[in-house]
Image (cartoon, rainbow, N blue to C red; front, side, top):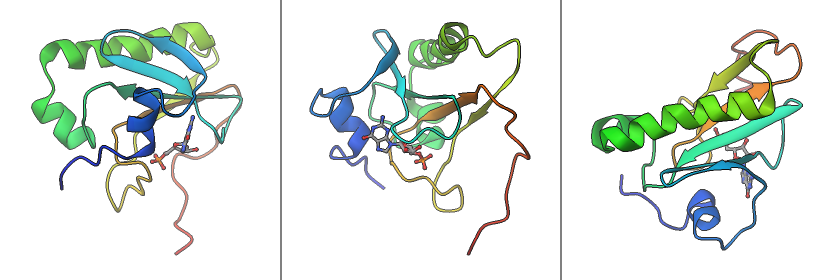
Amino acid sequence: MAYDPDNIFAKILRGEIPNRTVFEDQHVLAFQDINPQAPVHVLVIPKGPYENMTVFSNEASTEEQVAFMRAIGEVLRITEVAEAGYRIISNNGQDGVQEVPHLHIHVLGGRRLGRMLDRPAA
Ligand code: 5GP
């Protein structure tokens, strides 16, 4: 499936939709989730047009991949969740129930997060 340049995160990257930025560098943007599921809920996205982790891990440059991992580390530092603990999630594709077709990592923390997986409602 081709990357959809009209997805909401592509619009955020182009500055067409505002965001509350937590961290940014040449390759990565991290911003507050609009519908937070925990006191800390930050989305980390690559700036390149990567639909999911499959594409990113296969096609992104080493520099982009390293920058992505380091940006997650920066978000953990900025949000101060490391000591109490946190969860990192990336939903991919249909079974992963990915809503926005631009790779993103959710960084969640600030409360006990409960079990890792829930049974699907349907
Ligand atoms: P997914 O279900 O694809 O893993 O997660 C998509 C996430 O993007 C959701 O947590 C949702 O709240 C968030 N989201 C959707 N639209 C926007 C938006 O316009 N701005 C921000 N900051 N987050 C968004």
